[in-house]
Length: 589
Image 1 (spheres, rainbow, N blue to C red):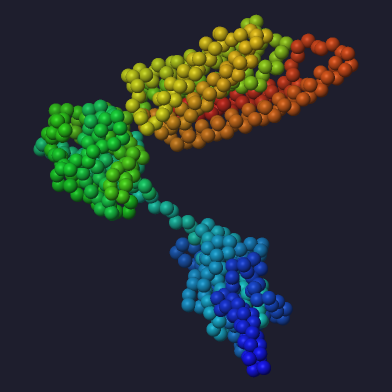
Image 2: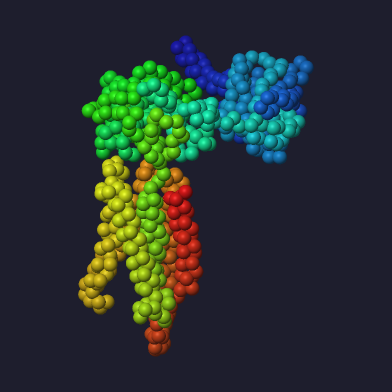
């Protein structure tokens, strides 16, 4: 009997503890995030309906960067409280939590409701007669708020919706993100023509906005160099090369690399036809190196002899002019440089013994013409020709142009025009590079040749097409459709890859205009295809009714929905013409 009694007591204690502990822990640790919306503690108890013995007040404190609010909970005389939960809410919409932030102290902790630190609750259950906290409004906030609180006298007794008077709040101005840039003082020697300067991007010296700037001066058989660059989040090096042409051939490079927060100055040798170079174990002709890195800006200085020999190549600064090549980009943790993220080349070979502001290389005329012709051909005329063949065969049925149907005449003219522009652009780029382009990581040249080859195949196939009633005509139709669309897809991909070509110097906006064109082209064809399905069903019903009534078929006439097709054609021409104009302008500007 004793054992049974003891067992019952133990079971009752365990059950009581299991029921009691969660409630105590909930009160001790403050309000849970689940209480954010209605601010009711998850105790299973109901809030009090009597007037609250506690008061919430708010006082605006002006700061150097906007207002903050000091929020205080007061207990009536003789009253104490053990817990609380406070939020800021809009006066005109108390259900909306304002995304400000409270601060923590030894009596409180913050909770993430709709935003980080947007509510504050108690950290312990010690008896309190007063509690004060500070709330900072979100940046650029301007409006009226109230502070709403829940105050707990004990576990079972609490009051909700205790509000302050409305407060008119002006939030802090957002702190601008500091972008690392070289000091404007660097440009003073360029303006006064005391030293030579070369920077990237183009015209950055005039605007004092260079991401990398090289300053140098020739004195008594040596050149003093200073190179400064603003490093992006992934950039780890800046470098300058000297080349007899404007390409990365067998050329010497002096590079500054950020390695473990230290600036290392070293020399390397470019390997032709690749984006790699070999680091030289011993510097050749440079000395007095120094460098430092502060607030995202790296600066390095060195001196170079006027006459040096590297890899059996003689560099004579006094008697020979060189193209200057600037670059910056990422590097691995052990200092191995990756492909540069930004690059600039001097417009002409530079005499390093003379003081000048070196101009950056302009995009060659043939490259601009090549890009413009290809954009006009593929984005403009070829896409319109494909549209005519796909969706306009049953429009203008009663008319002809040059003895053939109008859609075919327009399709043939546009394709021949686009093919002529393609051939012209193809020839121009080969004349510019004097052969095959050496941009191995970028498939633009190969894809361009494939697209042009497929385009040339189309008119040859058209001349050999079978008659309309021939048995092999369906095979031709499918091949003609496949080759044409394959050429179009490859051509658009080729234009996309042109954005990353350094020689083209295209802004990133070019990429997004192309994305917009592809989206518009796809959606337009989808809409026209849906319309065609609907109209074909309607046309089939009309023909069936004519045959059922014994009526004779009318002479050829436009298919149902032709007016809609004409209207959509006008919209297509306007939008595509605008996109082509924007792309061509970006090429030239």
